[in-house]
Length: 124
Image (cartoon, rainbow, N blue to C red):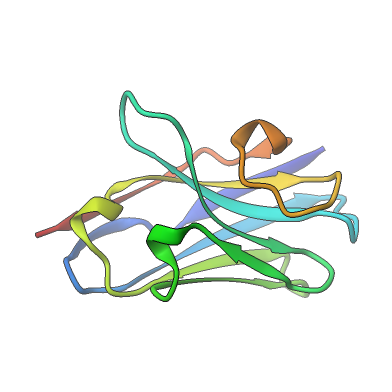
């Protein structure tokens, strides 16, 4: 069993930056893929970014390319999402997710474990 705990959300003005953290506890295998998703009320949970636990390969959704950076610190069992040049449309609850089967994936149903979410609000 894996537990994920996010932190770092908050209120920021448009153009500003935030860094989200996701602490991972439990047994983590090299095949794991870690992802960030976001969700507005009444909408589907959308893929933001993913990183492979072993090699650090990354993948981004088009709306955040060039602005967000996903990374992981294996020694600290932590995944980060650095968000720069934030826009009002980035406002959402952000969720950390883990997939144990390997392979970069962009659909929420392909992930096995989820955190509780952290709210990010960008004021325009």
